[in-house]
Length: 503
Image 1: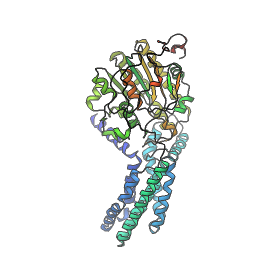
Image 2: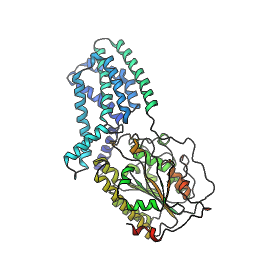
Image 3: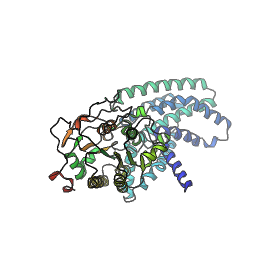
Image 4: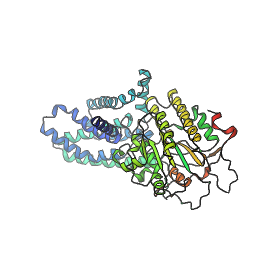
């Protein structure tokens, strides 16, 4: 059993590496170049030229590693590709181009096709195939499956390596060094300019820490419950049949333009949610954070220091962000479906009675990855999530846990057509759902300001009257709260607004 577990961990680690476009590009090019010259493996001169080509192309590898070309700016890669073809036209081989395309399609089919098709057994093969092809061509993130970013990068590097290899064998290395230097310089200037002009969709980040509010202006709150809809597309959430979430919105406060963080990756978003700071600071900004743990203070740490209990119920991808000691204290891992996770959350609320409980729901995101966002299956999964959240809320109410409590629902990020790599915040990934309901929360209020999920940690700390996490940047969401001086405080909810009547 231990061996099987270790194999699974290794497989997941490899998967996390290969799904990242920048790492995949480098590995694909090196392996592809070697396979293309398979017949020369017994020649010592070839291996000399191979290592020389790696050395000469290292600056180009480095630039294409750090400069992503996601979304619409991936088309700007045609510029460097054309320049490489003109500069090194003697080494531009049609056979290498065809070989690269075929090898890439084979690699991406093996890496992504098996993952894609295995999760959608109830859907016809033709529908799965069409959706898979669309995701390859429309991918918004810099994953290994973004065909219009990966192929130009791979062709640029293979042409450069081929030229360097031939130059070494023909004793014209000095000319090759000069041409590679010129190309690297032009590529750097070009990439820097393109990113300055067109890489403009990243949300603004607060530089200063969240302002401390020394006086408690809201009614006392004893517990906070937070349900996180992992990767839920906000537009489809509005379209779906969600009677309970609609009721929460009518009896609470919602934010129309709440934003995720950049990159909009599950791990980085959850770290920002718990620490209140940005990926640029907590440094967990991709799925490659498998061996990293959160180094910054989280809302769970703050609650523990204040003598209160905070817990999260999430999958292994999130629990691995914590060290072993924190996992024993804060984290309950559950790899099963959302329904099982909600049942476990109810059990935790009844037996452990934490002051703060976060529950991650993942079925919506998995369905979107497999079937796409714009399909009936995705809407049906949102409706099921709505029913499960209603069940959770109903059980909490029966247990008396919602007296002097706040119930929150949000997404960590949206979902578009990304394949799960370094997500780059297309419009559908950037904006998230965010609503609060309960003690001290306005009823039926819609806030039009533009907060980010980094505000959640400070808001929870404020509601539970504990200090903010040390690096928290997001301001407290005071717009949705009723102050003690405000006369509009009607608690508890009763009568025609009772949720049992609309479920």
